[in-house]
Image (cartoon, rainbow, N blue to C red; front, side, top):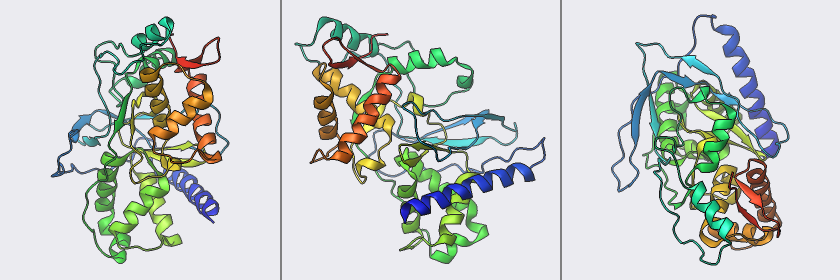
Length: 336
């Protein structure tokens, strides 16, 4: 069963993480060996950005527990050795400047229009959804304020990373190829993150000619992800892998569903889709907003699963004061 497989993978996560901690000296921190990746030869309008930073965040492995309405990954920071810079690859993130809302509904309530304008006005240099040096020092209040002010955009095209076949199954298991596997995963994340854990695993399987994931493959794949400087965030009943510099709290775009199903879209993307829908159409009743969100993500039928998925995203947006309920019961963008 998939649930058993996911639970086994999580146990391996925890065991590996504990083993790594016990084996490391106190004064040495293992660094993720990341090679600089060549830009892809396509017509992507959002090119790969390669940057070096003095501090990086360690991997975050969330526990398999029921998810509250506002789930935030815990983060810790380790000092980077000055003679070992880390190359971070970031692609599907947005850095937006202040810009008037487009496609607004002229019939929207005055307070609502004021709200929309307030929420898409950003101070210079703050509207970014990537981690920057010193960002972990910001207070939670400041971060929540920034999150409310983010200028959300979409839909963006969901693009798959163009990576050629890497080899045969036995090549994946070779210790000498370990760093190559990590670099390939980073390249996948640069294009496709945030990506659901099993979807990422399937992408890697195809690159090494696997038709079915054995327990041996699952264990090694989980071990490699644990060693890398990426975040694995539990969201709803799934795990999502985020790129090195992506930060869920500051993620401000949503993408076409593309080569995914709705359950492989993280809640942050769903919230951004709902936000843009309100900004463009004005306040809506809860069910109408959920249906509009489903339409934007290409759901042909409004099934119970679709309804529950958007209900979760809406509740989280309300709990984090990204959206608010008006006196008439309609949902609008938060003005605070």
